[in-house]
Image (cartoon, rainbow, N blue to C red; front, side, top):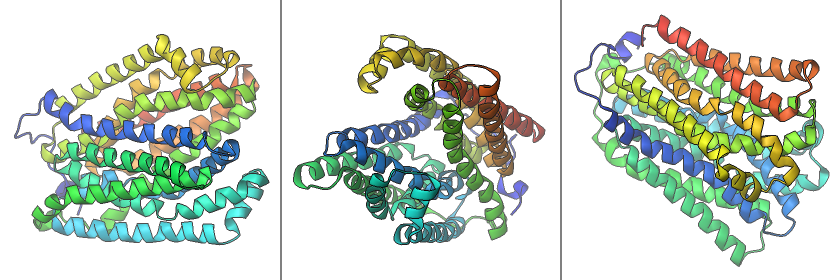
Length: 441
């Protein structure tokens, strides 16, 4: 199947699409991202109240970061299912692909967890303190089902998005969050599990519940699927060509955080900056996620009828709204309350949040356009351009964090904010260039 047979012409707009409909399709997806943003602080808050909190928080953080890297190739199943599930035959092929991905990534997790490789990675490559390694290994073993459960959940959520059932997605995230937090509280009350292990158990319980809920909500859609026309059936070659750039996009994106930390550690005020940057980043991510959730909405509605102008108009409004909300939150009294009482920054660190927070205000603004142009390219089947744009982003980021500390005497957190924001500009500029050359709007 090629691009022409896979997509309808952008000029075909048989039904009206208004801003209200886009909004109500988008809101549940935005809620999904918010729930995911809430989950980790909740787990950390419980671990912080258990015995040996410092060691367990560190071990859990190591476990989660490595699990996320292993998971990264599979998280694009959300976009793949939204874009490619045109009927029963395509769904079955995508499900087989999902089985293969889940088996492969789970095997990687198993090999790493059950052999000396994990200890070698932590001790020799990452330089993790010895007292953390045992805790990190036991919690990493608990996380073995992580990649598979995340992948299947995103597959079924993508199908729900494709067929306009986005409100069910918010239900799956409520169920996931409730099970995660319920497991944490019960484990805290009834067991003496180490905090890192309890966090891993709660996380696996939550994602398993979310996956099961997503499947149950998607079942009526799956049962109603019919065989698509032969010209709409994709080949294995098309699927691999479509998916591997998205896979690279996720892997490269996850590598950006250690690159930033490398630059921060070599700039002025390294310790202070390493403490402040994750706090600023987490708040920014919460608001940026509202914009990133628009990507699958764009893909689904483009698949439905090729609507361009209403979606582009919504992206502009979303860009303005998320940027304004972030600015008001950070620079109103709420920002200081968050940084001081929720994030727990000490008084001497609070002053370091102002400039980087101002710089990254542009990131939520850019997020809506990032989602829009990625959605256009996913719809067109030109996912290779998304991977190229992310590579450009990461290359820009790397050059800036290496060179800027040698040129200017700015603190590491300001350099990180500048590098992160400007790299977003380069990525979006490239996406705009490619989308316009494809004449997709």
